[in-house]
Length: 188
Image (cartoon, rainbow, N blue to C red; front, side, top):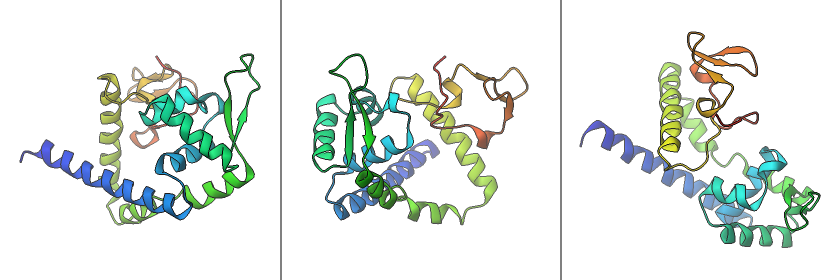
């Protein structure tokens, strides 16, 4: 196999580990993996992204799938629907206190991967991160990855100042400063 094929196979294996770790957490709390992902997403994102449409795009599933998961989470008192917009049919999601407790137990489900990364040389990690950020951006631009909030696709990102630069923060960015999920992201 050529190197690209080996890398793709390796990424597939990492994806399987991610799924296994997520399933283990989900079973522990009698939730599905998508429900755990929704809770963790809501915990770490602005309310304008915490709605059915954005979550469906984020997790690349249908709106009915997200709606069903949300219904279960609301029924289990883990999420609260906030109908404070002008349109009484739309809502944002907020974590309940019970939901926050679940997130506290589940948000570090990738810890086994994190521990293994600690044993890898920092130079290799920086190179891997730079490659991943570029790959994510390219997959998004080709339409395969539907959502990305990386610096590369942001209107504040600039390369004309000798490298990566954020015009919002007004600072030069290192490769390791490139964000994969920036809260200030605005599409170009």
